[in-house]
Each structure stands twice: as C-alpha cells, then as structure tokens.
Image 1 (tube, helix red, strand yellow):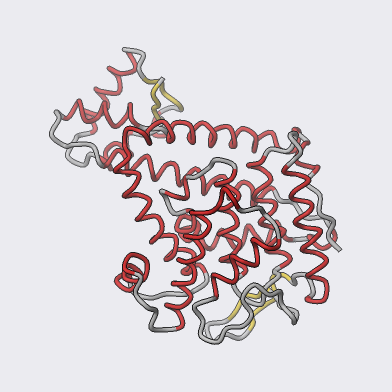
Image 2 (cartoon, helix red, strand yellow):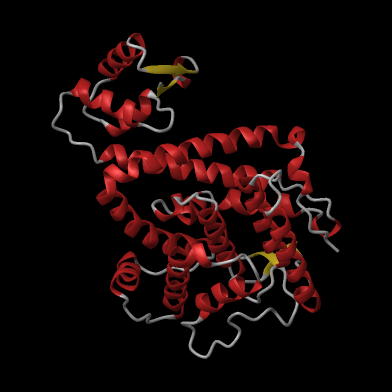
Length: 350
C-alpha cells in the first residue's frame, strides 16, 4: 500500500530545476499583483470570464459539453439546467464559487473534500452519492468511442480501504504543509496525484481534483486561477495531461512513483495562465498612440519575456522592421534586456 510522505521534496538535488521554475512563477505572481490596484475594472472583468471558462474547461476535460450560450446562461444568469450535462456544468459552477468565496476559511481535510464533491453533484436529481466515498472498486481506463474499455490505465485504491487511506492522506498533507522545509508550490501537484490515485468517489474525481488544486493555490497566495481559467489551460493540453498523470502514477501503490512529470506540468500550466493574463492586459492598451509608443508599451508592460512574434501578434498593423528598431532603442537605453539569440530571442523589462 502507498506510504504518504512528502519528505523527498526537501531534497534540493532532485528538484533544483523545479525550484527554479517555482521562483519564476513566484516572480510572475508578484508582478501580476502589482497591476491589480491600478487595473481593478480589468481584473473584475477577467474574474467573470475566468469562472465561465473554468466551468466549460473542467467539464470539457471529462467530455461534458453544452453550447457556449447555455454555459453563459447557467453561469451568469443562474439559468436552470435542462439536461444531465447541464446539471454537471451547473454543479461545477456552484462548487467553484464555493471554493473562490470561502478558501480562506476552508481546511484541506475530508470534510472539505466531501463538501466540494457534494456541491459538484447536488444538481443531479435523485443523486445520493454526493460527498460519500465509493462503495465499489473503480478503474481509470482508456475507452473506445462506443464506451467499451480499451485498456486499464490505473487501478485506484480499493473501496474497502478508502476511509483509512483518505485519513492518512489528509494527515500527511497537514504534516507537510507545516514543514517549512517543504515548498508549498511543489507540494500541491504531489497532493493532487495522490488524490487522483486514491480516486475516492465513484464519479467526479477529476473535477474535484481541479477544484482542490485551486483551493490549495489560493491558500498559498497564487490566485491567478481567479482571473485566468486554470482548467481551461489544462483542457488545451488534455492529451498531455492524461499521459503525464499516468507517468506520475506508475508504481504509486508500491511508493515507487515519481511526481516530477506532474509537478512540471502543473508549473507549465501556471506559467501559461500568467502568460495569458499578460496577453489580455496588453490587449486592453489603447491603439491611439504612435506605433513606436505602442511597441514600447507592450514590451515594458509585459511580465513575461516577449518575442518579436509575440509583439507582432498583439500589434498586427506594425511591421517587423519597426519592432526591431524600437527593441534596439530600448536595449540601448538599458530599459530592457535580451534573452536568447536570433529567432528564439525574447525581451524583458529591466
């Protein structure tokens, strides 16, 4: 049976590259937070959009769909769901609102996990399994289009062991959380791998795991998921998500698994969220300035390294020659510095 311990996260030799990535993300968090006070209306607008995209994205990962119009009606107008899929979507909306509004007061424990699951499935008419652990064994499987199982990817914890294992799991998290030598940002993806490997509910484990990810990130001060949908970014890399999860679960029962692939994937998704908020922030800039002023604003406002191609995508009416001229001027004035060379070069404010 798997032994829950996160002591390995103290080993700097194993996770040095991940420490570097976590430092980058922490820096991006600081830069994003610095923009909030002077851009309140934009962040309020992004918050509304993010909830809708999160509801759509997290359900899409599980193959649950409806039209964009219906999602907007359910999320923004509290419209009653008309189909089973819409019940699933409405349930996720209830649960993500609960996490977003109450994360400061929620602990990562069995009660919170069960409450999130209960809210997730509460819209199902007659659904009585909300907040209750599975009573029969389940498997994570790849399926054919007709629903039949192609292959078993992973066999989670047996139903008879779930109560005991969940208690051990939540206790192990609390011990690790209180250990100052264990970086919180590295701990979170490991906890999610363990939750998905236990697979404590008969249905909804994937969606609960993404809500738990947001909860833990929020509690550690990484609230980017409020403004850019974390789930929607995962959905863009859905194929990679399942492959990487499988790699991190291999050998889990014997405690021989490696969390590294899933930690790295989670960090990459976080980076994509910060990159997207940077893109949306820049896109709101007025187009009335002169071209060279607009290029300068794009580069100096960017919180992530930005390439010539990125600038051209944001300012399609500006030529490459003009972009190169402005970049050279900013480098000469020591306002920005260059990372990389030739086509891979990117630029960032000093």
